[in-house]
Image 1 (cartoon, helix red, strand yellow):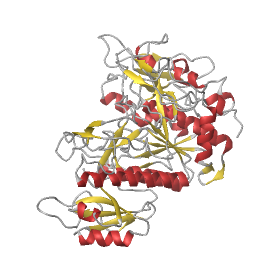
Image 2 (image 1 turned 135 degrees about the vertical axis):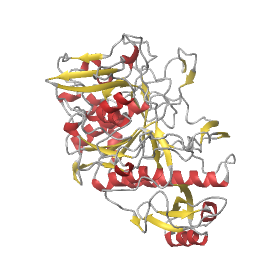
Image 3 (image 1 turned 120 degrees about the vertical axis):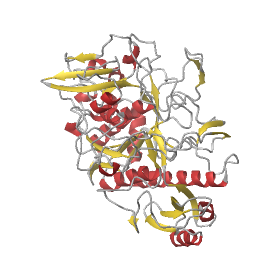
Image 4 (image 1 turned 90 degrees about the vertical axis):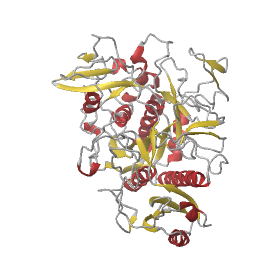
Length: 546
């Protein structure tokens, strides 16, 4: 699954020097290893030297990106290229990421149990507002932030994910179709011939920019900005513009290059804040110089680290506030010693290796990125949520089906947001007549219009709450700029933390969950490993002074 995700119909900062299809590109190859496309990251001022090194190793330069400082090289000997002093990393151009949660649902229900068809409107809100405990927790209610700040269509919120269903009735009013882009090409099967994305549904295996065949990105977008329109749910910032910046394939995997392309594009068109509910693979922890890895593997991880750092720096320098999910392995990211899940693509490539705190989960552990941990309806940190006194910046509701600390039951302990009908049909969660087959799915009908919603949990569901509050802040204090408004990401981050509600570690700090698992919280109430600077607070953000 190589050389995919070329830009089409978007602002193209990469200078194309030749055809960039998945196969048939010119370039040297050896009997031992076929030629493939690599992203060659060079030092400042080192482009010419890196190109000479690539050509000396038998490679052919196919393209370049001067803004982020890399060449696209067709080669069969990446280690030779990487040995040159001008080169800081060489990474195979392939799918190397996936969403940070497995789209957790409540699972199958007993025979005869049906999902809900909701016809009642909650007082003072949208019909399903009574089910949105998460919005109540952060003060995104008619008497809270909605009464003071709802965002603005001048605020552009980018969703870097599996896509956004731009036709969903509770997304469409705020969906910015003109700026939305799809940076990936789906792969029916992986390099071993196993099903990956499945049959292509559109010409060239490239979905339109308003399609989501996974559902993850639509759920995220809905939490951020579903409008208050008398249907379904309301988002944290119900008046913002939602921009689909798709970097994930139907199967949920991400390429490094499309992810960088999405960040670069966001910066160039004036997007104000992006949500990144994914992590970059194939390495759960990217190590620059790990003795447990081969020289080629170390070179690849250096390229991932360098490429993402440059993309994040570029976006932030152009006014993009960056929010990400911290991850769902229940790990203290500062104390991980062993990694058994990497490389996780293609399937079966995993190995056991030693890691340390210099090995980074990307993008969660990159400078300039706001990492969000997850809590359940009682306010406790969800057991699946990663944490760490250095890594967790802020907390938000992400759902916890095992959190029995409230009167909520089952799926209602998770986060309810919009779901694409096509995905629910494909996964068998609704029947032929469109009726939900599980309590995790709700169909809401109002004034002759129906839409679907799904309960999910994960740090992927927590991050968009923070992204939404960031959008409220930008809507209040941003100044005219490219795309509509602009605000220094450092100031957005400062106000996010200043308005968060401090939340100290539980007592005892070695918190024991009902499953028997114990996780240790370190740090004071002002900044700790479970909740960072505290719980995000939309109501306070809607009234704070700059």
